[in-house]
Length: 116
Picture 1 (cartoon, one colour):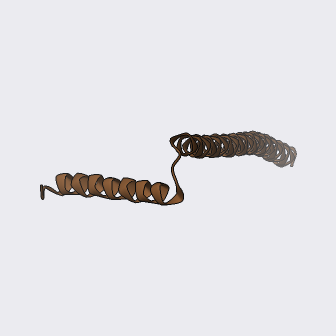
Picture 2 (cartoon, one colour):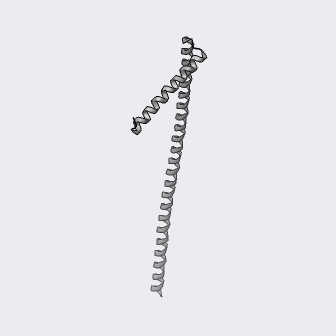
Picture 3 (spheres, one colour):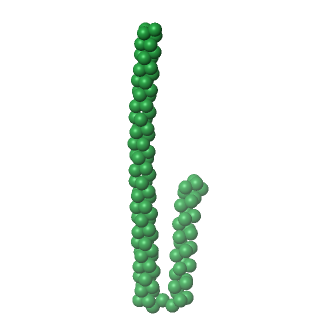
């Protein structure tokens, strides 16, 4: 009877130790999962910050481009004023510039496709 009781006690202790080991492994797995989650949250925040910076850079580039276009337009108007161009002369020059640009584009396309 004592031997059976001793065996039962040993089995109970082994079962408790096994349960404790499983609980420790589970706790470690949960801690690893939490560290992984925290790393993902941190990475997501970094990505959001990068996207925010990229959008700001795009806005700044667009503002610079708009400023350049406005400056070009102002310089063109000033040049036309200094040249004393009339509206008709300005329209004629614009049409000529458009024809030249179209011819350059057509020549570039012909070269690209081997038709020239």
